Image 1 (cartoon, rainbow, N blue to C red):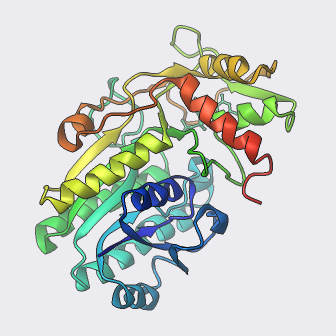
Image 2: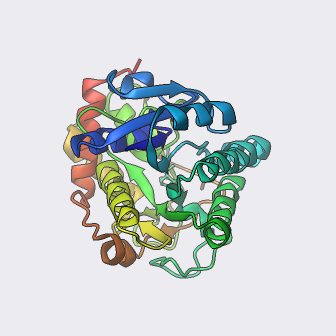
Length: 326
Ligand code: UDP
Protein backbone atom coordinates (compact mmCIF):
# COMPACT_ATOMS: atom_id res chain seq x y z
CA UNK A 1 0.00 0.00 0.00
CA UNK A 2 1.15 3.54 -0.68
CA UNK A 3 0.85 6.99 0.84
CA UNK A 4 -0.42 9.84 -1.28
CA UNK A 5 1.62 12.97 -0.52
CA UNK A 6 0.10 16.16 -1.86
CA UNK A 7 2.55 19.04 -2.09
CA UNK A 8 5.33 16.45 -2.01
CA UNK A 9 7.56 18.70 -4.14
CA UNK A 10 7.29 21.53 -1.61
CA UNK A 11 9.54 22.52 1.26
CA UNK A 12 8.20 20.25 3.98
CA UNK A 13 6.50 17.65 1.77
CA UNK A 14 9.75 16.84 -0.05
CA UNK A 15 11.47 15.98 3.26
CA UNK A 16 8.53 13.79 4.28
CA UNK A 17 8.77 11.95 0.93
CA UNK A 18 12.49 11.43 1.51
CA UNK A 19 11.91 10.13 5.07
CA UNK A 20 8.99 7.87 4.10
CA UNK A 21 11.17 6.27 1.44
CA UNK A 22 13.96 5.73 3.97
CA UNK A 23 11.40 3.73 5.94
CA UNK A 24 10.59 1.70 2.82
CA UNK A 25 7.12 3.17 2.49
CA UNK A 26 5.71 3.39 -1.00
CA UNK A 27 4.94 7.02 -1.96
CA UNK A 28 2.88 8.73 -4.65
CA UNK A 29 3.28 12.50 -5.04
CA UNK A 30 0.64 14.89 -6.35
CA UNK A 31 1.86 18.47 -6.81
CA UNK A 32 0.86 21.19 -9.27
CA UNK A 33 4.37 22.73 -9.02
CA UNK A 34 2.87 26.18 -8.36
CA UNK A 35 5.47 26.53 -5.61
CA UNK A 36 7.02 23.06 -5.50
CA UNK A 37 10.16 21.95 -7.33
CA UNK A 38 10.27 18.82 -9.48
CA UNK A 39 13.98 18.51 -8.59
CA UNK A 40 13.08 18.12 -4.91
CA UNK A 41 11.59 14.69 -5.71
CA UNK A 42 13.70 11.71 -6.68
CA UNK A 43 12.94 10.66 -10.25
CA UNK A 44 12.04 7.14 -9.08
CA UNK A 45 9.03 8.41 -7.08
CA UNK A 46 5.59 8.09 -8.72
CA UNK A 47 4.79 11.72 -9.54
CA UNK A 48 1.60 13.35 -10.82
CA UNK A 49 1.55 17.00 -11.81
CA UNK A 50 -1.87 18.46 -11.13
CA UNK A 51 -4.32 19.97 -8.67
CA UNK A 52 -5.66 18.33 -5.54
CA UNK A 53 -9.12 19.56 -6.60
CA UNK A 54 -8.91 17.74 -9.96
CA UNK A 55 -11.30 14.98 -9.04
CA UNK A 56 -10.72 12.85 -12.13
CA UNK A 57 -6.95 12.98 -11.62
CA UNK A 58 -7.22 12.01 -7.94
CA UNK A 59 -9.64 9.19 -8.88
CA UNK A 60 -7.15 7.96 -11.50
CA UNK A 61 -4.35 7.98 -8.91
CA UNK A 62 -6.49 6.00 -6.48
CA UNK A 63 -7.32 3.44 -9.15
CA UNK A 64 -3.69 3.08 -10.24
CA UNK A 65 -2.27 2.79 -6.70
CA UNK A 66 -3.51 1.17 -3.56
CA UNK A 67 -3.53 4.23 -1.30
CA UNK A 68 -3.65 3.71 2.45
CA UNK A 69 -3.40 7.29 3.68
CA UNK A 70 -2.93 10.86 2.52
CA UNK A 71 -0.44 13.40 3.83
CA UNK A 72 -1.80 16.73 2.68
CA UNK A 73 0.92 19.39 2.51
CA UNK A 74 -0.12 21.40 -0.51
CA UNK A 75 -1.36 24.90 0.28
CA UNK A 76 -0.68 28.57 -0.33
CA UNK A 77 1.10 29.91 2.74
CA UNK A 78 1.79 33.65 2.43
CA UNK A 79 -0.09 35.37 5.25
CA UNK A 80 0.22 38.86 3.71
CA UNK A 81 -0.89 37.68 0.26
CA UNK A 82 -3.89 35.96 1.82
CA UNK A 83 -5.11 39.35 3.11
CA UNK A 84 -4.88 40.85 -0.40
CA UNK A 85 -6.18 37.81 -2.27
CA UNK A 86 -8.43 35.87 0.10
CA UNK A 87 -10.28 34.27 -2.84
CA UNK A 88 -7.31 32.17 -3.89
CA UNK A 89 -6.58 31.12 -0.30
CA UNK A 90 -10.14 29.97 0.45
CA UNK A 91 -10.32 28.27 -2.93
CA UNK A 92 -6.95 26.55 -2.89
CA UNK A 93 -6.59 25.73 0.80
CA UNK A 94 -10.21 25.04 1.71
CA UNK A 95 -12.44 24.31 -1.32
CA UNK A 96 -9.82 22.20 -3.11
CA UNK A 97 -9.09 20.28 0.09
CA UNK A 98 -12.79 19.44 0.41
CA UNK A 99 -12.73 18.07 -3.16
CA UNK A 100 -9.69 15.97 -2.31
CA UNK A 101 -11.36 14.69 0.86
CA UNK A 102 -14.53 13.78 -1.04
CA UNK A 103 -12.64 11.57 -3.48
CA UNK A 104 -10.58 9.99 -0.69
CA UNK A 105 -13.65 9.17 1.39
CA UNK A 106 -15.60 7.84 -1.64
CA UNK A 107 -12.67 5.49 -2.23
CA UNK A 108 -12.42 4.48 1.40
CA UNK A 109 -9.10 6.22 2.08
CA UNK A 110 -9.78 7.38 5.61
CA UNK A 111 -6.42 8.20 7.14
CA UNK A 112 -5.47 11.84 6.68
CA UNK A 113 -2.50 13.83 7.97
CA UNK A 114 -3.03 17.53 7.59
CA UNK A 115 -0.53 20.42 7.59
CA UNK A 116 -2.22 22.92 9.84
CA UNK A 117 -0.64 25.91 11.50
CA UNK A 118 -0.27 27.93 14.67
CA UNK A 119 -1.86 30.73 12.60
CA UNK A 120 -5.20 29.10 13.47
CA UNK A 121 -4.77 30.44 17.03
CA UNK A 122 -4.39 34.11 16.08
CA UNK A 123 -3.15 36.59 18.68
CA UNK A 124 -2.11 34.47 21.68
CA UNK A 125 -4.07 34.89 24.89
CA UNK A 126 -1.38 32.97 26.76
CA UNK A 127 2.03 31.43 25.95
CA UNK A 128 3.07 28.64 25.57
CA UNK A 129 0.09 27.86 23.39
CA UNK A 130 -1.50 24.46 23.93
CA UNK A 131 -4.08 22.80 21.69
CA UNK A 132 -6.93 24.04 23.89
CA UNK A 133 -6.02 27.67 23.24
CA UNK A 134 -9.01 29.44 21.58
CA UNK A 135 -8.72 29.66 17.80
CA UNK A 136 -9.33 33.05 16.25
CA UNK A 137 -7.11 33.46 13.16
CA UNK A 138 -6.03 36.93 12.12
CA UNK A 139 -5.62 36.22 8.39
CA UNK A 140 -7.52 34.48 5.57
CA UNK A 141 -4.60 32.01 5.47
CA UNK A 142 -5.22 31.07 9.11
CA UNK A 143 -8.97 30.88 8.55
CA UNK A 144 -8.58 28.68 5.45
CA UNK A 145 -6.60 26.17 7.54
CA UNK A 146 -9.02 26.51 10.46
CA UNK A 147 -11.94 25.73 8.15
CA UNK A 148 -10.27 22.51 7.01
CA UNK A 149 -9.75 21.56 10.67
CA UNK A 150 -13.47 22.19 11.28
CA UNK A 151 -14.44 20.03 8.29
CA UNK A 152 -12.12 17.23 9.43
CA UNK A 153 -13.86 17.03 12.82
CA UNK A 154 -17.27 16.82 11.14
CA UNK A 155 -16.06 14.30 8.55
CA UNK A 156 -14.75 12.06 11.31
CA UNK A 157 -18.13 12.17 13.09
CA UNK A 158 -20.10 11.50 9.89
CA UNK A 159 -17.75 9.45 7.68
CA UNK A 160 -15.27 7.99 10.14
CA UNK A 161 -12.34 9.86 8.58
CA UNK A 162 -9.39 9.58 10.99
CA UNK A 163 -6.96 12.47 10.91
CA UNK A 164 -4.05 14.07 12.67
CA UNK A 165 -3.97 17.82 12.07
CA UNK A 166 -0.46 19.07 12.85
CA UNK A 167 -0.27 22.72 13.81
CA UNK A 168 3.22 23.82 12.78
CA UNK A 169 5.03 26.69 14.44
CA UNK A 170 8.00 28.13 12.42
CA UNK A 171 9.29 25.51 9.98
CA UNK A 172 12.94 26.01 9.02
CA UNK A 173 16.26 24.31 8.34
CA UNK A 174 17.12 21.76 5.67
CA UNK A 175 17.83 18.07 5.18
CA UNK A 176 20.92 17.07 3.21
CA UNK A 177 19.08 17.20 -0.08
CA UNK A 178 15.97 19.32 0.49
CA UNK A 179 15.89 22.97 1.52
CA UNK A 180 13.88 26.16 1.52
CA UNK A 181 13.40 27.76 -1.90
CA UNK A 182 10.37 30.04 -1.89
CA UNK A 183 9.70 32.65 -4.52
CA UNK A 184 9.21 35.24 -3.15
CA UNK A 185 11.12 34.47 0.05
CA UNK A 186 9.71 36.19 3.14
CA UNK A 187 11.00 34.01 5.99
CA UNK A 188 13.58 35.21 8.44
CA UNK A 189 16.21 32.45 8.32
CA UNK A 190 16.65 32.19 4.53
CA UNK A 191 16.67 36.00 4.24
CA UNK A 192 19.38 36.27 6.91
CA UNK A 193 21.40 33.65 5.03
CA UNK A 194 20.90 35.53 1.73
CA UNK A 195 22.47 38.54 3.48
CA UNK A 196 25.39 36.32 4.56
CA UNK A 197 25.80 35.16 0.95
CA UNK A 198 25.83 38.76 -0.28
CA UNK A 199 22.60 38.24 -2.22
CA UNK A 200 21.14 41.16 -0.28
CA UNK A 201 22.83 44.03 1.53
CA UNK A 202 21.16 43.64 4.90
CA UNK A 203 18.30 42.13 6.84
CA UNK A 204 15.43 44.19 8.26
CA UNK A 205 14.42 43.48 11.84
CA UNK A 206 10.68 44.08 11.92
CA UNK A 207 10.25 45.92 15.22
CA UNK A 208 12.52 46.22 18.27
CA UNK A 209 9.87 47.60 20.63
CA UNK A 210 8.05 44.37 21.47
CA UNK A 211 7.58 43.46 25.15
CA UNK A 212 10.36 40.81 24.97
CA UNK A 213 13.82 40.83 26.64
CA UNK A 214 15.62 42.31 23.59
CA UNK A 215 12.58 44.02 22.07
CA UNK A 216 12.37 41.74 19.00
CA UNK A 217 9.68 39.16 18.31
CA UNK A 218 10.04 35.58 19.56
CA UNK A 219 9.15 32.49 17.52
CA UNK A 220 9.33 28.74 18.04
CA UNK A 221 11.62 27.50 15.23
CA UNK A 222 11.36 23.86 14.30
CA UNK A 223 13.58 21.85 12.00
CA UNK A 224 11.81 20.39 8.96
CA UNK A 225 13.32 16.96 9.62
CA UNK A 226 11.66 17.00 13.05
CA UNK A 227 8.41 18.14 11.40
CA UNK A 228 8.70 15.36 8.87
CA UNK A 229 9.27 12.75 11.59
CA UNK A 230 6.08 13.91 13.30
CA UNK A 231 4.17 13.13 10.09
CA UNK A 232 5.64 9.64 9.97
CA UNK A 233 4.68 9.10 13.61
CA UNK A 234 1.18 10.44 12.96
CA UNK A 235 0.83 7.96 10.10
CA UNK A 236 1.95 5.07 12.35
CA UNK A 237 -0.46 6.29 15.02
CA UNK A 238 -3.41 6.22 12.58
CA UNK A 239 -2.27 2.89 11.17
CA UNK A 240 -2.51 1.42 14.66
CA UNK A 241 -6.08 2.69 14.94
CA UNK A 242 -5.39 5.97 16.74
CA UNK A 243 -8.21 8.45 17.11
CA UNK A 244 -8.31 11.84 15.41
CA UNK A 245 -6.20 14.57 17.04
CA UNK A 246 -5.08 18.17 16.70
CA UNK A 247 -1.41 18.41 17.66
CA UNK A 248 1.04 21.33 17.99
CA UNK A 249 4.52 20.94 16.51
CA UNK A 250 7.09 23.22 18.09
CA UNK A 251 10.06 22.96 20.42
CA UNK A 252 8.47 24.86 23.29
CA UNK A 253 11.33 27.34 23.38
CA UNK A 254 11.49 30.59 21.50
CA UNK A 255 14.24 32.64 19.90
CA UNK A 256 14.10 36.37 19.18
CA UNK A 257 14.85 37.84 15.76
CA UNK A 258 18.09 39.29 17.18
CA UNK A 259 19.09 35.88 18.54
CA UNK A 260 18.50 34.30 15.12
CA UNK A 261 20.63 36.96 13.39
CA UNK A 262 23.38 36.56 16.00
CA UNK A 263 23.39 32.75 15.62
CA UNK A 264 23.61 33.15 11.82
CA UNK A 265 26.59 35.51 12.21
CA UNK A 266 28.37 32.92 14.34
CA UNK A 267 27.69 30.05 11.95
CA UNK A 268 28.42 31.81 8.67
CA UNK A 269 31.29 33.97 9.94
CA UNK A 270 29.72 36.88 8.02
CA UNK A 271 28.89 40.30 9.42
CA UNK A 272 25.19 40.33 8.30
CA UNK A 273 24.06 43.92 8.62
CA UNK A 274 20.73 44.25 10.42
CA UNK A 275 18.56 47.38 10.22
CA UNK A 276 15.68 48.09 12.53
CA UNK A 277 12.47 48.48 10.51
CA UNK A 278 8.82 49.03 11.53
CA UNK A 279 6.81 46.10 12.87
CA UNK A 280 5.16 43.88 10.25
CA UNK A 281 1.38 44.16 10.45
CA UNK A 282 -0.27 41.32 12.32
CA UNK A 283 2.93 39.94 13.90
CA UNK A 284 2.36 38.85 17.54
CA UNK A 285 5.23 39.46 19.96
CA UNK A 286 5.66 35.86 21.08
CA UNK A 287 4.52 32.56 19.55
CA UNK A 288 5.74 29.49 21.39
CA UNK A 289 4.18 26.03 21.41
CA UNK A 290 3.28 23.82 24.27
CA UNK A 291 4.21 20.63 22.43
CA UNK A 292 3.62 18.09 25.22
CA UNK A 293 0.79 16.45 23.33
CA UNK A 294 3.00 15.58 20.34
CA UNK A 295 5.39 13.78 22.70
CA UNK A 296 2.63 12.03 24.63
CA UNK A 297 0.31 11.03 21.79
CA UNK A 298 2.77 10.52 18.92
CA UNK A 299 5.97 9.75 20.86
CA UNK A 300 7.65 12.64 19.03
CA UNK A 301 11.12 13.64 20.16
CA UNK A 302 12.65 16.50 18.15
CA UNK A 303 16.33 15.99 17.33
CA UNK A 304 17.30 19.54 16.31
CA UNK A 305 15.75 21.93 18.85
CA UNK A 306 18.75 24.31 18.99
CA UNK A 307 18.63 27.29 16.66
CA UNK A 308 22.36 26.82 15.87
CA UNK A 309 21.79 23.30 14.47
CA UNK A 310 18.80 24.52 12.47
CA UNK A 311 20.73 27.42 10.93
CA UNK A 312 23.77 25.19 10.27
CA UNK A 313 21.60 22.82 8.23
CA UNK A 314 20.02 25.69 6.29
CA UNK A 315 23.44 27.26 5.67
CA UNK A 316 24.83 23.97 4.35
CA UNK A 317 21.92 23.68 1.91
CA UNK A 318 22.03 27.31 0.73
CA UNK A 319 25.81 27.08 0.30
CA UNK A 320 25.46 23.92 -1.79
CA UNK A 321 22.49 25.36 -3.74
CA UNK A 322 23.17 29.12 -4.02
CA UNK A 323 20.46 29.51 -6.67
CA UNK A 324 18.01 27.20 -4.89
CA UNK A 325 16.65 24.34 -6.98
CA UNK A 326 16.98 26.14 -10.31
N1 UDP B 1 11.21 38.89 10.41
C1 UDP B 1 12.07 39.98 10.39
N2 UDP B 1 12.64 40.31 9.20
C2 UDP B 1 12.40 39.65 8.05
C3 UDP B 1 11.53 38.53 8.08
C4 UDP B 1 10.95 38.18 9.28
O1 UDP B 1 12.31 40.63 11.42
O2 UDP B 1 12.93 40.03 6.99
C5 UDP B 1 10.60 38.50 11.70
C6 UDP B 1 9.08 38.42 11.67
O3 UDP B 1 8.53 39.70 11.94
C7 UDP B 1 8.80 37.39 12.77
C8 UDP B 1 10.01 36.45 12.68
O4 UDP B 1 11.02 37.19 11.99
O5 UDP B 1 8.80 38.00 14.03
C9 UDP B 1 9.72 35.19 11.89
O6 UDP B 1 9.15 35.57 10.66
P1 UDP B 1 8.91 34.53 9.47
O7 UDP B 1 8.37 35.32 8.31
O8 UDP B 1 10.14 33.73 9.24
O9 UDP B 1 7.81 33.54 10.03
P2 UDP B 1 6.34 33.82 10.64
O10 UDP B 1 6.53 33.93 12.12
O11 UDP B 1 5.83 35.09 10.02
O12 UDP B 1 5.56 32.62 10.23
